[in-house]
Length: 119
Image (cartoon, rainbow, N blue to C red):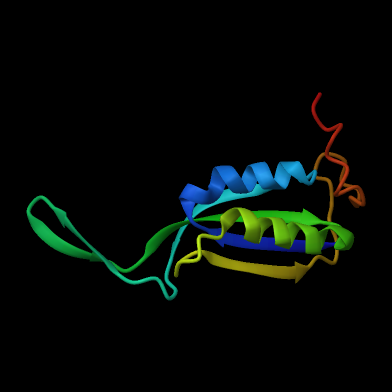
């Protein structure tokens, strides 16, 4: 198993979710985050005062899946989140050694089988 973390622009989230669903990825976690990379600082005005934005709003997607789904998932993330500008984000891939189902307390080997989880 692998865990993919993708840091993307918030405005690309809807297209990215559509792309993931199109390849059968329906289970993931989304968090609002802020970060800094090569993207330039932005300037703004609030109540008549100038300020500099050095941390930019981003969205982090976390996906745990089987090894055989990693390449296709990465290609889909890039295709759906890429704008070609600085600040598009990053993708990180980590090994997952074990996963457990909290409800049953048992090891969870069925990470890709999310189709029948709704009750």
